[in-house]
Length: 349
Ligand code: 5AD
Ligand code: FES
Image (tube, rainbow, N blue to C red; front, side):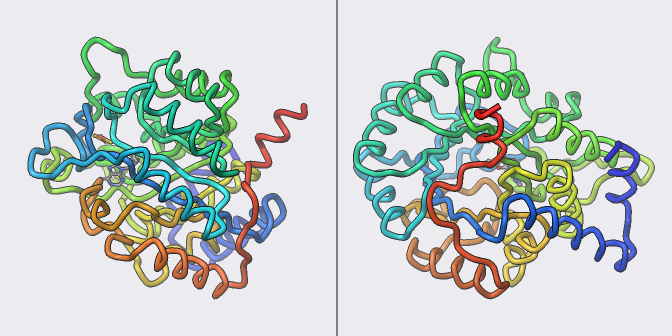
């Protein structure tokens, strides 16, 4: 698909035409990654964050939240729960927390690998090349770092640097590939100021980066952040709305643009539509879900955006809920690690 075609789809509002888009995305998904939906157990290990992203509730300037950091033992309990529930992967996520030292993370990875067969995905923010290499050497399999928007002016405006360290997520994504990770990235749909051209560029960037994993969800304003307060839309009706429908369009187009990637139906989507968001995501291109394993006493504190889905459910409830949702739409629950087929193709080439 070229830029113009992607943009036309993003601006399409005819229900029949959109029905064709959903069908195409679903067929591409089935042909390339099959009917299995892979489960990734999400462990939000720390909500401390040194950064001040204008959209994120965990930003350092947000003083009203209680901060927590899980111990190795607490995290290992969650990892063993993942095994018990039949998940092939744990996703270890946190704010950019510099108290999670290289040693803390490498020891954690080694312990999880020694005690389980789980694949490990890290989502720990912008780390140095040296750290990323050490995490990989310790056994980490995958890394997620969204570039958020391909409009670099907007990205830099809402993403202040830390000290004098330059902030180039695309460069980090390329490094991750070199270091042998399965690489995931993605965007928020409908960031104030972003246009249909920007979003079409985002989707083309997924292809250019040859991503193994693509995560995307609607931008959800958080009232305690700058972007939750002073919203300045893009001019001339070009502002991409941060709606459920626009997120499905982006998801479907991402699937068509990157047929082999693993694409989750995200919590942000479920937040906009608690009843059906996960299922509709899965029916329109997604093949992964990420049930939450974070201990319930920490869940509500990991408030990236408000009214996040799955806050009050226990890990057990999340897993039952996800399985039921997958089976209700005639799909199967994936077994094993659920590596990205794209990653294997690249390794075999
Ligand atoms: N709304 C939606 N998604 C958000 N994220 C951060 N803040 C928000 C928000 N207000 C997403 C970003 C980040 C991921 C961990 O969560 O895309 O990369
Ligand atoms: Fe910390 Fe976004 S400001 S994860």
